[in-house]
Length: 245
Image 1 (cartoon, rainbow, N blue to C red):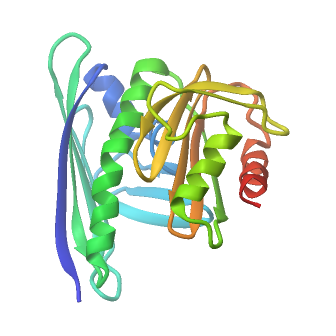
Image 2: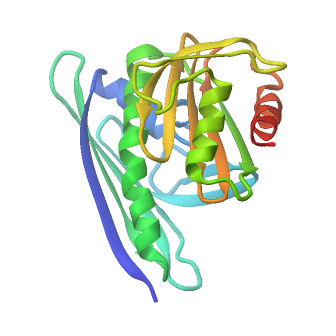
Image 3: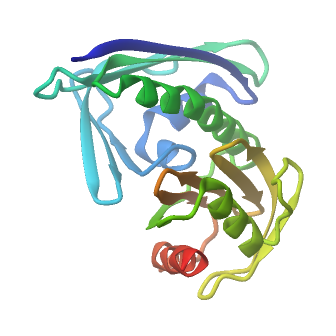
């Protein structure tokens, strides 16, 4: 049995409508703040695709109005489930832009858990978008994804292990400083810019780093703006496995 849902959010971003459009309607722009590796065919009727951890999902571009509106919709599954996204952009003069996001569709039998996860996740993603436009505007990132099983560890234990490896205090709070020297990676020195019950995010001089501790799995979604990113995904995967080992 499917259940309809809709999540609507609005945020004011420190950027022009053109900058916001590049961030939400192009593959390199989305790579710089959202999840996975992304592609957007720039036309109505085109394809928008996201690949995360080897899984690729495609959607149809149902509206494409540069600087104003982008909408996509996935094909319905066998049970009728689908996801639809709409982004509406409105300039507010100067370098401020209002972005309204509507995420809707049909969820499956476990719809309540799925809905709660989506509802909690969107404020974080929009916060990351604001960080990107504030500190890395006109740059694009290399996305990094890593995942590792957490075994029988509780979410609190996983968070404590991640925080300890980054020299962060517990509880993790916004404004705390993170420092680490992951093997095979440049030293990490940054500030916590987001912290909730499921994830925390860091900003350094050359990247945005997300650490997520879900049920049974720990995930990382990083956006690296530095010049030397070869091998970074493999190195972060090894780091995560070692921290949780």
